[in-house]
Length: 393
Ligand code: MG
Image (cartoon, rainbow, N blue to C red; front, side):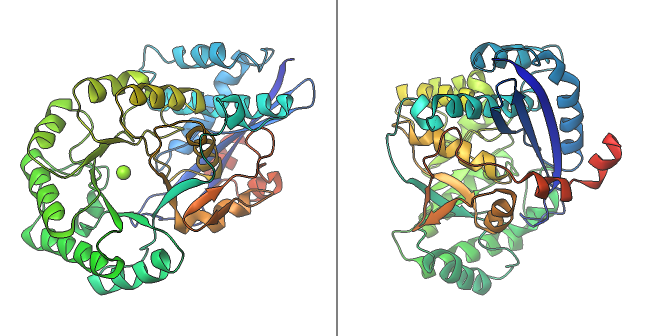
């Protein structure tokens, strides 16, 4: 069996602005065709702004290196793609690109075997997949609005865990670390929002806080401790920017709030210090950013050896990222929860020929071979990002 063609689609996220920051989100998909008529779909991920077009262009440049290869050789092709970026740094951009191919190859292998990907990964440890809700608060800016959204978008829909970043003052600096500090007013607003959500959802509900790496060490410690004491948060995610394991250690040593990191750690190698030095209670690798189904499965197994639960990061990914992650966590013992963007369900399902099903706070996969879901090519072509149309015209 041989790979005969790869087609790249860079699609505009029509839901736009999903986390409240002004970003031009783009989704990158690829279709891998074979000489036996079996086709696989992959998602290559793009974190913001023009990176989708850059990713699409890179895929177009490297795809020749896999055309003619046997799509069954996932492990070897993963290394072939990943190592192409060695001298610029393979992690991040290179792993997202590799993930696009990796996901599509698992889809092909499952279709050839007549089995869902989770069966190829060891079989089901669980069904369905427990979720937590993110982006359920869109448009909210006051504690009252958050409380109302928590009732309507969380409790009424059967979710039993949610995530939010309540420190709205930091939104304009999202991904652009400044001095790591927040004003007294901004800090208090965050506490008030979380308290209002806690009041609505009750004492046992899981409220996860995403700090988005916005803070310096003393600020992160103060915010984590106050939120844990006041509102009993379930985790404080990315307290400090991802570059310094030492800063993370210092936060960890000075707070009782559980710590979660991982969406900006790439490949199994970046997670070694987290496990070895016990720097987090939970990890949340991103299935695509970290290198695809093959890589996150390995990271999950490493975490298992340390009894650390894994809760894969998904937002702002597209539908295949969510589905790929669900296949992986279906097959592992040390799963905690899978993130999903409530706000994107409708858009995701427009892109698929069969919608995925979320019921009672859990994702139910359809059990079909491969990933089990196909992208709607007509929809993709009708929603290509304008910059991608220019780049490929
Ligand atoms: Mg996060």
